[in-house]
Length: 130
Image (tube, rainbow, N blue to C red; front, side, top):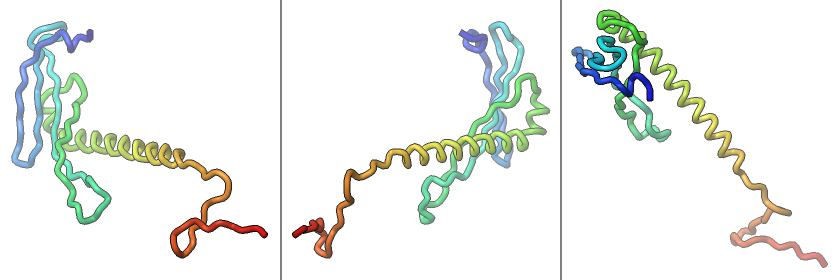
């Protein structure tokens, strides 16, 4: 069990008119009593379908600020930390997509023997030797 699992924290949320949200966790009990942790939250527009008719959806995205920072640092570095976290998330999403497409391309099962050719009526063509 980690130190964070043994602790109790008070949660306070802050937001501004531009949609930036910060959640502050102040440790009330436990080994790190009095320390603070900060989590940011922004709304991202995410493309949910390759179909251009489907509009992008808003998705909440949460990220952690580095430990040991105070609220004024968090407030002044919010945009930079959010952008950095979003880029890391996008990179991980792209890598997962690449890996998934590589795995799906490996699952192609080769045909046994000669491939079946279909005639104009949609039925398999059989070769007649004679």
